[in-house]
Length: 135
Image (cartoon, rainbow, N blue to C red; front, side, top):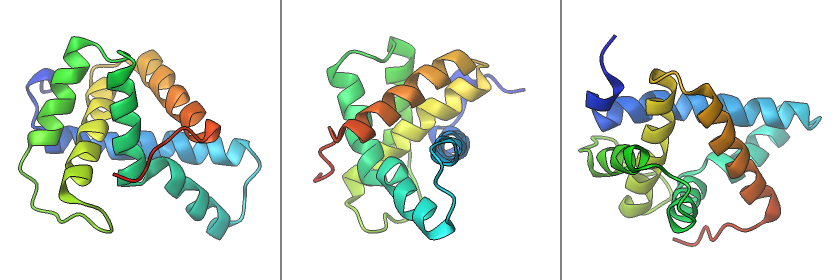
């Protein structure tokens, strides 16, 4: 397998998007939400580009990320993407790509405990209503 430290930020974000999404979907099912429309609507609070961008900024402000994770975030954020942001600014979209890259890197690096820790932190922030999604 390729060294995740050397991988393209977009490739890491591709995996990280799925890793984080599965974590959130499982959390919502465990909360007892079972209707598809309600699941989709609720998941958006956790997985939208705006939410992810706000979460990664909070992680940085609170010094939750390691130097390596910050480097991975920057690689994902700065990577050239050929997809357009939907319903958000390009800056927010790129920031959320950096967020996803961190989760992709952690998955490929076999750091499941760290994924659990960061994803749980994200869930707590969303559920506490502490996100400023107006970016």
